[in-house]
Every structure is written in C-alpha cells, then in structure tokens.
Length: 105
Image (tube, helix red, strand yellow):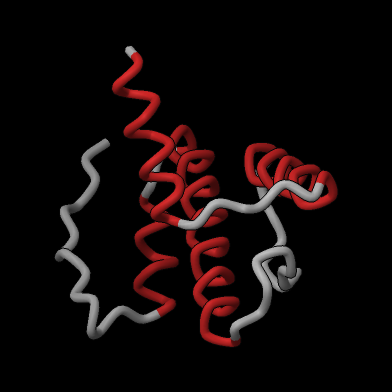
C-alpha cells in the first residue's frame, strides 16, 4: 500500500490536527517509539517548568505522567535516587560524568 508523502511540518504552523494526522499514518510498529519520545518530551517540558519556577531539583510536578513502561521505570529510578538523598545531576555534571567514563575505556 502506498502512503502519500506529506509536506514537512513547519514548526511555526504545527497544529494538533496535523500531528494527529501524521500519527495516524505511522505503522503500528512505530507507535512504541513515538510513545517513548512523547514521554521524553513531557519530561523535558516538566524540567523546563521546574527551572523557570526555581523549584528544588528534588521536587517534580506530576502533570506529565509516564505513559510507557520505560517512562514509568525511569520515573521510579528517579524517585529512588531522590529518596536516597543522592544529588540529582544537572546537564554539566552529566556531561562531566560521561566524559570521565569515556576516558576510562
């Protein structure tokens, strides 16, 4: 079955219906990956919200619930880290940890 080519979405004119139409053209096998990306995007938006309201890194807002098993697992791991009292890493600390890890290999 030929799927008609769609025009690329212009980020300034994206509408919800355009996104829904694009999702409806995806094969079933692509939906888990899309769900995982949406979990990530919700997390990213929530993090930006935390930064903009200057909440401590240990506080989160639950308006973006994880929708996939991976998202739920990541949320659970984060809760364990917060409960342990270990500090959450910011972008710079993560980058430093990755660089250190790569230098050991």
